[in-house]
Amino acid sequence: MRLLIGIDDTDNKESRGTGYNSRQLAAAIESENIGRVYGITRHQLYVHPEIPYTSQNSAACIDINSEIEIKTVIRFCRDFMLQIAARGSDVGLCIAQSENVSEEIIQWGIDAKSIVLNMHNATELAIKRAIYLEGLTGTKVGVIGALAAVGLRTGGNDGRFIWLNSEKNLRDIENGIHTAEYLIKRSGIDIVQSVENEYINTKDRVNLNEWARPVLKQNKAVLLVEKSLNNNSYEWKCAAKELVKRISN
Image 1: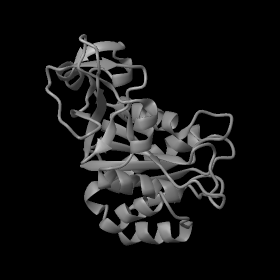
Image 2: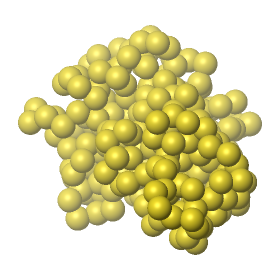
Image 3: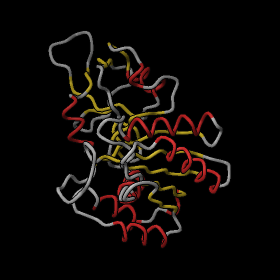
Image 4: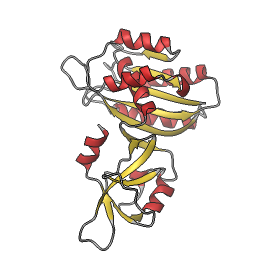
């Protein structure tokens, strides 16, 4: 079964962030044979004075396939997050079978990017859809973002991948010139696409830089590139960092 694991507010100002903690949880899920991780996405939520957050107010969603009982997955993730949660954090954990994520939850995720939401409504919505949602530490306000991450990942058009299960993670591939075909085969991305939504030839060459982050578009991991001008060594280059952030936030 496909499970989506949303986490939020796992850190404090001195600790590593939620993105790092999501990768730690994903690695533990695989090493303990809890499931096979497809990828992890980062989702930017609303930044507002009424919303408590540590640094950027982003949540993460881990997309896995598991053959074991969901109660076992919940227990494992819950115990792991309690172990690694930073002091003073307000951890929220959400675990949902993909078929239980309704349009209401997708809309919750969309709303979490632009308006102030509350914990009570998050809990009610999770109960309605038979989805596990729990605040594990502190004020437990992290349930809002944890549920939002699951909704946004299901919607398939928000955020960017911070990890993909592949022969080599994209950030581990040597910077420089590679064909699109090579990047797709080795890094786990699905598509290399221009920022103007043009699908590029798999034989075209891409200049890979140190900040290559696939975005989530139509439920695919998409590496965005820009046309290379006045360079005969490659046809494309990775889209600029600020452009990728603007598109994926």
